[in-house]
Length: 321
Image (cartoon, rainbow, N blue to C red; front, side, top):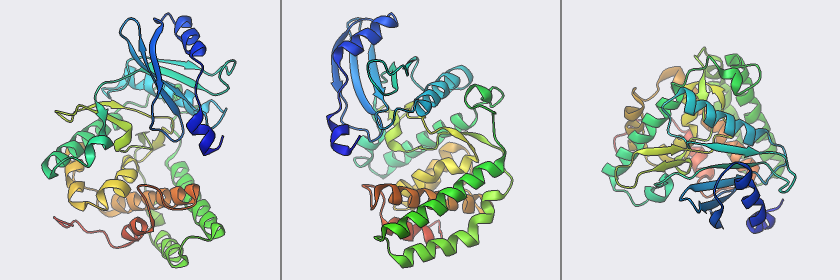
C-alpha cells in the first residue's frame, strides 16, 4: 500500500458493526478516520451506549505479528503493572472482511502529548517530561516472570539485543550509502563513533520490557495536570536495557533542548545516565536515527542530518544548552 492508498484507506461501516456485534458491544453511532498515523490507520468510534473506542488497522502489512504483540503487551500490562493503558482490547486477525490485522480498544481521554508540547512554557514542559519519565519507569518495573505470554522463548539474553542493534546500524549505514543522498562525511563520522562506542552495547544489563517507540505522540495526557493517562502503540515492544527506551526522546526532545533531559530523569527516579549507560543510549539513538533516515529516504518531520551531527558531538549537560 503506497502513501496515497494509505491516506484514502477506509474500513466499511458494516465491518465495524459486525465486529462490535460479535463482541457484545453496542452499535456504532459515529465512526471516522483519525488524521494521525503512519503505520496504522486509526478510526474513532462512539457507540450508542456511550462507549468510546478506537479501531486500529495495521494496513501496511497483512502480517498480524505486530498487532498480536501489541494486544498481548497491553493485556500483560493491565494484569501485571500500573502502566496506564486501555482497559480492554479486542483483536481480529482473520482477514475475512478487512485484509489487515485490526485491534479495537478503549479510547482514552486527554490529548496526545505532542499536541501540547509546542504550546508549553518551560516550567510546564519540564513537568510533562517528569510525568513521561514516571510513566516509563512504571513500564520498566513490569515483572518479566510471565514474559512467555508476550514472546515465544521469553526474555532473550542481553547479547541478542546488542546484536540486533548493531545489525540495525550496519543495515542503515549501508542503505544510506546506496541511496546516495546522505553526506559521506556524516556516514564516516557515524562509523567512527560506532567503532568507539559499540562495546557499550555488550556491557551487562538487566533486561526490562521496552516500549521501543516511546515518544510524545504515543502518550495521552491530561491537558491540565499533564498526568500520563495512556501509553499507546506497543506493537514494537521487546526486551533490552532500560536506557534504550529513551533513544527517541533523546533525538526528538533532549538534543534540541538539553536542559529538559534532567527533568525527564528526575521523573524516572534517577540521575541522567553516565559512563557506559550514557554511551549505550548514544549508540541506541544513533542506530535509530540512521535507520529512520534510511527508511524514509531522507529527513523526517522530526529528524535530519543536523540532529545526527548533534548526536555525534560530545554530550554536555549544559544548564541552558
